[in-house]
Amino acid sequence: MLFRVNKTLNHMLKDRGYIVTDAELEMTQEQFIDQYGENMERKDLVILKTKKNDESDKIFVFFLQETKVKMVGIKACFERMVAQNVFRAILVVRKDMNRFALSAVTDANSKRILYLESFKETELLMNVKEHAFVPEHIALTTEEKKALLEKYTVQENQLPRIQYTDPIAKYYGLKRGEVVKIIRNSETSGRYVTYRFVI
Image 1: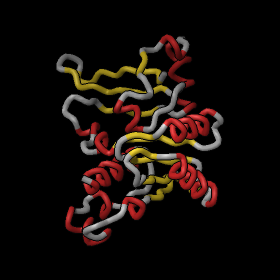
Image 2: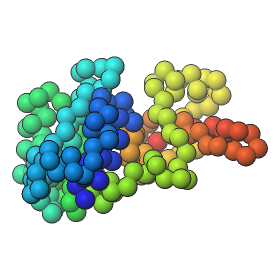
Image 3: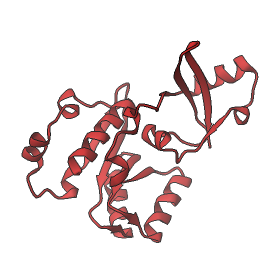
Image 4: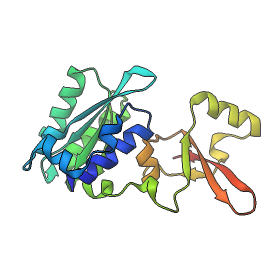
């Protein structure tokens, strides 16, 4: 199970623009077991990646051990992020977080001190991007978003919406206020492009 989760995470990080090697993307289950051992601990699977075009933009991936994550586990993640000057992280949890841990994550995100996303292991067993019915999604930069709104003379809230909790929005790490370009194949027009505002 952890092999499949790790594989999906590596593809997700590459799709978000982080540096992931081909060896990491093509790792077999046997290679995974050789690297981490037969009885691996989740804390040994921590990943730290850097953005391709911005060395200051780094992301941690923490695999949390507890079935129901407590504040102690979240605090350890916060401390490691601050110590290494990393302001973004993905938390992989087995089941849930207790209300204090969830509150700490929400509070850190709302204060824009740190940005943490959480995924249950079961959400990462399959790569949602590889599903046959999921079209290509491309997050727009701030400049591209501004150009789009000017081109069509619309406000961002007039665009069709996508929730930030949507599985594909979570996959790309989309935040509220961003715009995503969706490219679908069409039998009549070849390619059909639409835009969604993340709420």
